[in-house]
Amino acid sequence: MILPGKRVTLPSVPVVHRRFETHAAETPDATAVFCAGQRMSYRELNARANQFAHLLIERGHGRGTKVGICLDYSIDMLVAILGTLKSGAAYVPLDPAYPAARLRLLLGQIPQLAAIVAGAATVELVACAKAPVVDLAHLSDKLAALPAVDPDVPVTGDDICYAVFTSGSTGTPKLTALRHENWFNLLNWLTVEYGLHRGSHNLVVSAFGFDLSQRSLMMPLFCGATQYLMASRNFDAAMAYRMVTEHDIRTVNCASSTLYVLVDWETASGRSALTGLDYVLFGGEPLHVGRVWDWAVAEGNTCTLLHQYGVAECADVATSYDLADYRRDEHDVAPVGRPAYNTDIHILDEQLRGVRIGEPGEICIAGRSVGAGYLNGSGPESARFTTIQVHGASVRIYRTGDRGYVTETGQLVVLGRMDTQVKVRGMRIDPHEIERALGRLAGVRQAAVVVTVDAAGDCQLTAFLEPAGDDPADSDVRARLLEALPRNMVPATFRRVDRLPLTPHGKVDRAALLDELRARVPTR
Image (cartoon, rainbow, N blue to C red; front, side, top):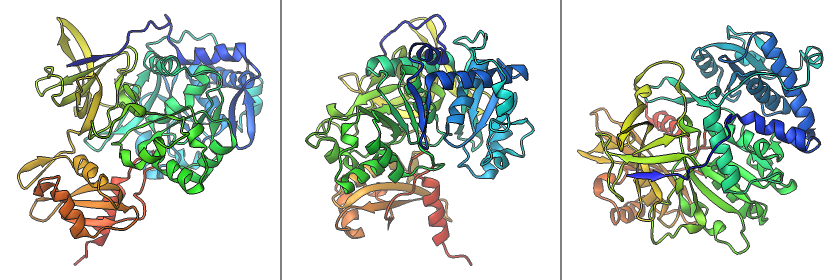
């Protein structure tokens, strides 16, 4: 089964920062970025990025090298990102919200790391690195003396623009790289398909290390709008909602769980800031439609909710679906829609053969979204980048490890991870299916199911419930689940939490839930 995306011609040199340079030339006085009360125009941001690019080039850190960036959200962060791209190098986000031990691990995984950009608040976090650390504030005089014109570096669509870390199935962080062509194709699709323009001002709400954040950071600069940054290392729902309320924000990109938090703020405040947005682009984890449905369909809500699917290895977003088209009585799981431009979705069986419409299989991505691959090793995950034969031609694909199917109307539906399936009493189950069933029960706001293994080697299911209204008794929840699920899929234990914990990326933190379970086990 092949779900094809629309074919669109890209420029001969599909390089992302060239679009930013065009806006700097055409609307130099427009505000490019706002952070902590400070504004910077396209002209000034371009000039400062050029000076940083010239510094990197002067030091020999150009095409083919990697520049780590360990900064809190700030204007300097955008200077470092754009300057790195202009030099021909690729940037690697090093999230300062990560523990120091994880940052040390990540630093050791970056090949050809030429330099690290840090500031006073983050320099100690990368002090262990062998690469030189660049502090823009300390180099202000040096940078001011460098040319403010665009550097003459022949960057191409095949050059790597950034690389982000994603946890591998082996537990070792994988550094997956994107080419300019991949990123340009994504940003061009978002801009053209959804009519983004110079008024499509954006607010970044996700952590810097998240693949979603790279799209969110560059999207407004690609279309000439203003980028709004929160002066906070970690997600601050109150600050985010206040900025949406006080500024002319038109777009927000976030994980599904972050959207729930923002909607909760909107509901509690009685305001309507989110309902007036143009778009919320969200995804990254299974959607619990009930968490946003009443708000989404409320009278006067003109915000378009784009439920999107993708992976870091393939430019972050591969498909998109307007949630306004969702009918709860027709689909148990909200679709994630149709492919981005120049992107195809293949649904394949275990032998990498196509399946029929409606038949589940592994979701594989092909086309100009497929990235350059992993940079730091040749472990088992590297085999996910492979080729298949389609109508006699070799096609490069990325095997996502996600299960899904295509509906009769040509919409992709994601069913969950293939590797999250576990055997309980001899039968293979998917915890996400249990979460969806729990989320449909009255009195359950949201649920997360985690799997542990007991002393006998048997899998045990524990459901963490975020109650809504009257808290149903365990026996009632169990009885209602048995009406929809086989007995082996009903969790043995139910635990209540005021709110499910989130990772810095805005997704449900299942590791934290497992830690809580382990902490409750008495020691001998």
